Length: 373
Ligand SMILES: *Cc1c(COP(=O)(O)O)cnc(C)c1O
Image 1: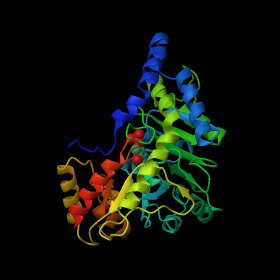
Image 2: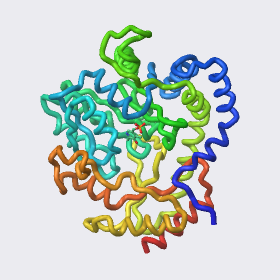
Image 3: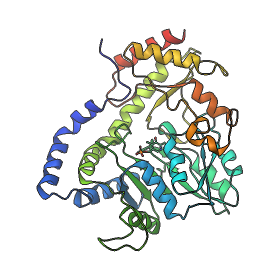
């Protein structure tokens, strides 16, 4: 039997292939490989899609986060608060500025615990980074209310929620968000790419300058910048895929609802919940298995069985950041963030992408229930 992939980039490519080839021809004909008309058009189209005033294309999502933090003035001696259960990039971006990542636990929806985040804010805190994990937005309005009156800015890590909404609003509206177009994201390039989204013209300009060797134009260097530009071939791909993104997100929602229905009425697999007020875009469909304190043995066995049957189950992510060697120096030990640690031991991601069929989902659930039973 054919395997069932966690994400199916081939099916997505088949839909856009013609447009991508034509776009590549346009770029090859004019040899404008970095920046240029395709990039400018994509930035406008993605800003319109996200309902923000400004989109600045950069080289990847990690850079997008780091450049925003740098533009906000983060550096050595400063702190930024973020959840322990995120992809390493969120913490790397903080560390790359020279600031210190301050970790907090997540809530039952795997989103940043906003009360814990507000409590972790101190005199050195310049930013708090809610991560819109798995495709739904963290409760940024609650975080904003808790931070009101202080000087810490909210920087949204929107790498996993392109098109998602909370209380009608997308990431970055009224503030600033960084996103990634790594190929496996809901909107993925054919290589690395990322963007900063904001209504703040000054902040957008500061990021643009930092990402372009510190200047607006060639050989103008007003600050020490670097190179983190979006290239035209990636912009071609992103423009073609952006046209389908709303439909693809709709297909993801339908697939998530199908998993919910197939997994209803049993108690060995905890299905994901949607925070009230959210329009989820299901970057990942993350279930929880096993028992608290089982050290991940049950989950690992389930993933192994699924993989052995050709089902591309994955774990996002198997270690909370404080238990990785890279961030051990922050000084948090085991037990520091119980919800993040429990999640890391018990979660697994089922195959989910816009081209997944109902038949495939039935096979996944059958194999999953057999593996946990
Ligand atoms: C993918 C991702 C990033 C970073 O993106 P890159 O483009 O790979 O640098 C940051 N944060 C989260 C939560 C991500 O999933």
